[in-house]
Amino acid sequence: MKPDSLVIQIFTVGVLVYFVLLNGGYLLLNILAMFALRKRAQEAVLDDLPQVYSALEPPISIVVPAYNEEATIAASVRSMLQLSYSEMEVIVVNDGSTDRTLQVLTEEFSLAPFPEAYRIQLETEPVRAIYRSTRFPNLRVIDKANGGKADSLNAGINAARYPLFCGVDADSILQRDSLQRLVRPFLGDPQMVASGGTVRIANGCEVRGGYLTRIGMPHNPWALFQVVEYLRAFLFGRLGWSVINGMLIISGAFGLFRKETVVSVGGYTPGSIGEDMELVVRIHRKLRARGTPYKIEFVADPVCWTEAPEDHKQLRNQRIRWQRGLSESLNSNWGLMFNRHGGVAGWLAFPFFVLFEWLGGLVEIFGYVFMAVAWWQGWISWDSAAIFFFVAIGLGILLSAFGLLLEELSFHLYQRPGQLLMLAVVVVAENFGYRQLNSWWRLVGLFKWLRGGEAKWGVMNRKAGWQRDIS
Image (cartoon, rainbow, N blue to C red):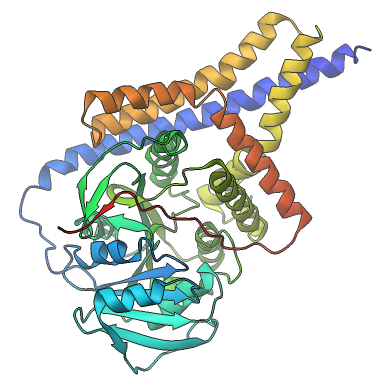
C-alpha cells in the first residue's frame, strides 16, 4: 500500500534539504580553508629566512601514552627525540601494557629507575615507577597501572616540567620541524591555549631510525581510502573551523596545550573514549563561562604520521569508538550550545556537530534507504531520486576532490604522477560504498552509546610495515 503522498513529499524534501545543508556546510568550510591556506602560502616565503624565534621558543613537554605498542614505540620515541626544537622533554606513559612495551623502551633507551618528586595535580591510577634514559637526559618513562588513555595523559601532565605539553600517540612519527611549526600560534598570541596539527597516514611510507625517509602510498585499499578521508577532515574541516575560532577537536595524535589551562578545567576525563575532543569542547565551555578570552588554532603545516587500520574489523571498531567519543563529548557539554556567551563554538560549531556529525549516520542511512525504496516502489519520480543521489554522491566527490586540490596546491607531498592518479581514483571510488559504510558504523556507534556499557580505549594490532632498520 502506498503511503500518504504528503508524508512522502515531507520525507523527500527533508532528506534533500539535509544533504544540501550538509554538503553546503562543508563547502563553506572549504572556502574558509582555501583563504587560510592562501594566507599561509604568502607567509611561507619567510620560512627560508633566519628564524626570529630560533632557540627562544617556550619549552615543551611531549606526553606519549602507550598501551601495548611494542611494535612502534621505539621508532616513535626516536622520531620525537630528533625533533629540531630548542628545549623539550619526552614523557612516555606506559599504561599497564601487557606486551613488551616497557622492555623495548628499556632496551632501546637504556632506562634506569629515577626517583623524583611527582606532583599530583590530576588524580590518576597509581604510578609504579619512573625511569630515565641514561642515553637521553630529556627522556623519562612513567610506568603505571592501566587506566586508559585519558588517565595516562593526566599522569604525563602531572610529571611535565614545562608550561606547554604536546600529546602524541605512541604509533606516531613527527617531522623534524613539526614542533616548531605547532608552537607558532603561541608565540604570536598570548591568548592561545591550544593548537593542533595535520595527521597523515604512514602506511606505505618508510621510516629509518625515527626519520621519515620516503613518502609513499599504501597498497591496502582500507588504508588508501583513509588517505583521502584524512585530507578532507584536516585540510578543510578543522582548518575551516579554526579560521573562526570554532574548532571543537584537536586530534589526540598531535596537539599542543597550555598546561595551566588544561589543569584549570580538570584535565582529561578518565574513562572517556573521546578524550581529545571532550577536552577541547570543555575548554570552550568553561573559558567562555568565565569570560576568559582565548584562541584555539589549527596549523596545517606540522605533519604527524600515524599507522591506519588495514582490515575491516579494526577500522570498524575504530570508527565506532570515535562515534561513541563524539557522543560523550557533546553530551558532557550541552551547556555550550546556544549559550549567550557561546560565540562561534556554541552557536555554529556545536549545532553543526550535533546535526551533521552526531546524528549524521542516522539521517544519512535513513536517506539512502528511503530514497532507494521510494524510487523502487514508484513513490517518487526518477528525477527526484537522481537529484538526491547527485547531491549525496556528486557533491561528496566534489568535496573530496577539493580537499585533494588544496593538498596539491599547498603542500604537494605526493609528488609522483602515479600517486596523484591513485588519489584521484580513490576520491571518486570512496563515495560508492566506503562513505556509506562509515555512516553505518557511526550509526552503530550512536546506538552503542545510547545503550550504555563500558567504553574501552581499544587495541589496534600494529604491523609497522613502514619501519626500517637504521642500517
